[in-house]
Length: 150
Image 1 (cartoon, rainbow, N blue to C red):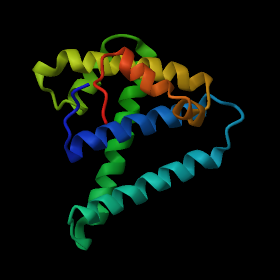
Image 2: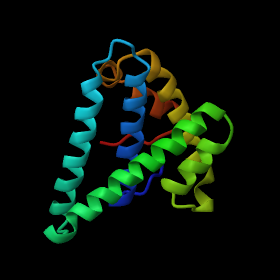
Image 3: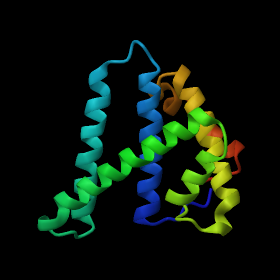
Image 4: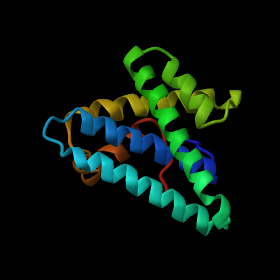
């Protein structure tokens, strides 16, 4: 959907899908509450590993990981509120975070917001791992015009 293939763009998609997974877990009464906590811990560890691989020095990795975690929670709050509103707030949030306010990306932001709404609806009803395993998210992306990645 035209998300920039940059460290920032990749972070935004990881954050968006982490949000969808955690929201889906909340909606499933049988979900193990420790799964969400372990998932967040894995996210933080992965951010740390990625920053080190990108050459970020040991002295600043902790600060950058904290900023990444704070950014995730900020986005989660915006996305959660926007999904509850069913207005254009989700499009606006995705435009601001994922496409960095690039006005030319308005259509791409709307498509990604549509995907996000559909994915949130699906993940509230079906376990996240089932959605990944059966290709539901990939089908949603294709339905919204995402290019196939090989």
